[in-house]
View 1 (tube, rainbow over the protein chains, first blue to last red):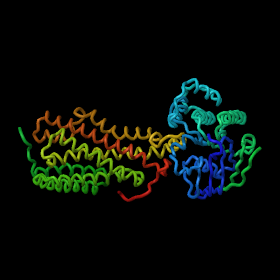
View 2: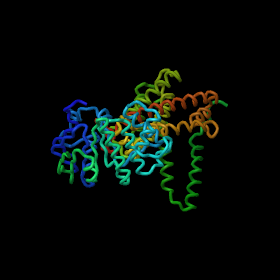
View 3: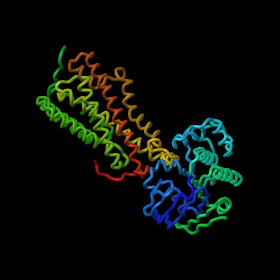
Length: 219
Length: 268
């Protein structure tokens, strides 16, 4: 990662009547938390960064280039979005972990690496267990583990701990934070919890009713 | 005994006795479908008489442009039929894929079959060209209808999985692979299954017709086997083109999954 390059720049972005952002910069190797009540446009914001939807107006730049000029699939291999409702593919836990590496065209890893990640995200299950039998919280962690295995440049996490209890939430986020910092990655995390944002965010962006309310740099 | 016994108009009228039986039964049971049954029988009679005369004229002409014109008409009606059979809204891109897959898949198979398998000379000889073309187009039409339906219902039902795959960096082709496999399988299975009972549970129509007209059963089975393989070929090629290109129509130029609801209603 070259020094001085800004990860994302949004200018005069407008999406239907859901979201309107005049200007926003997302810095590399930082943890940016997006907070706001439900329905405020946070998920739309993440989907736009991943180019799963395109703004009606305005531009979004990724590393200095308009994302409309980039190959969307290659962009999504560098910038991975974890949706709030985890997507679980039919099959085992192992299959669900490996399918991410396949989609992103990354090298397949061996079972010991998979087990390591399963343990770190606190899944007390075997690799060959059927993923559809997992609870909501376990599915959420499995989907998170799958994203981390890909080691993307940017992780966009949409309420990654919404189905977890407080204790597991803290452990999981702590793990994600250490992971991001150690590997010098960029993290953008949507959350409704101000406390979580305060504890982990280096930049806190507040959105309300589809409009940017404040950008706060945490020392 | 060679050749076929001519039924003739008077004895054909006797066959309508079965219609009277049906009407009496319906009346007795007070089902009240007399009108529909009479209309259906009339349509069948008029349509077949018209086709009989038309084919008689066409067979006597044996011109390549007539055979080609009828091929085009058959394709047109088959495609219209697909549009009306599929009970879900079809977007215009998918409609174009239906046209493309029908035209390329069936035409390739038809000419391969007529020239290399039957060795038909001239290639447009209507007595062979029309029934064989009809069977290949008809079966491919059924396959495409099933394939389109499964494709649309698959993409609609698995929207979250497709988007989830895209978020992990999947290409649209990766993201729809399971749906494509499923649509392909369900579209070709009826044809595969129909081969299983063939000759035991029923005698296929073409073979029955040939046997009735005095053709040796050994020749009739040759034709039946050949046409079944031709049908399999055509159904697989058309459906394969359909599902492969069809799944791409659900995405825009930025590989974003588009709304699966129909965007237009005009047929082409």
